[in-house]
Length: 312
Image 1: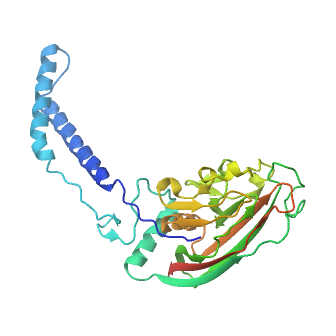
Image 2 (image 1 turned 180 degrees about the vertical axis):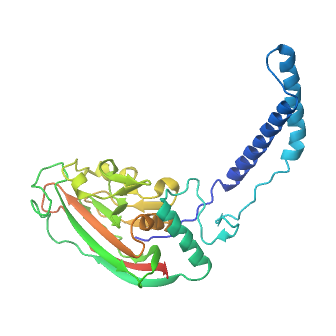
Image 3 (image 1 turned 90 degrees about the horizontal axis):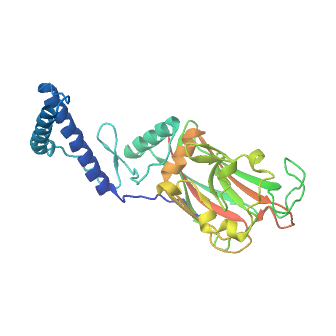
């Protein structure tokens, strides 16, 4: 698995043209209104309506020359202009921006500023999610007894990433992972501070959501349909935070098969989640579910090398 920055610039030029047209149209309409008010136009009779149309046409003709002078600043591809007109370093342009809360927007702005001013530090961490090595713990710790076809039990694993005191995390980038022969049973859910980054099937109908991100909660998932057939974990049935905005891509093999796991998340996804939770600490979680047999709640070992980008 690798978390990588995805820079998207598709559609930027068409957006600028659309914005230019919208501004011109607004200008035209304003001139029409001014002409109408100046001549105290009324639509009470036919003659007056003709008079109005004449001035509307005149306003548009004159307005074309004036309004065509309006220009939209062409920010370089791959950058987003900040409020003071300075390009935000390493910003991402997408066809639909990642949903953010107010606190997330604050973290994003601070991280952009820290990157622009060279205050980003990197901490390298190795994380391991071992194979639980046994079936689900049926009937304990909130798990239920065996029942085919339902999410009855899970195993939860968590790795806590801590940085220097008072530091704020801006990105979590997986630089190396040996998961070419990845296998799991029944499903897995990868979380960051309890929000779902990716899952092998989409359980989103059962979870609460905040600014478009699913929040994992076992109490809301237990005893729901297992969604553990191979047809339930095809690529179109999997979940990947930020995918709809062009900020991520996720690949898992189908359940109970061997294949490659490959995950890419833009820093905006990471920042949005950390901003809603705690940017001073990152908790990566791995949840493995099961319904009825001895191989459930298990996965092959996952070893990750992680670059933690943060600022003080």
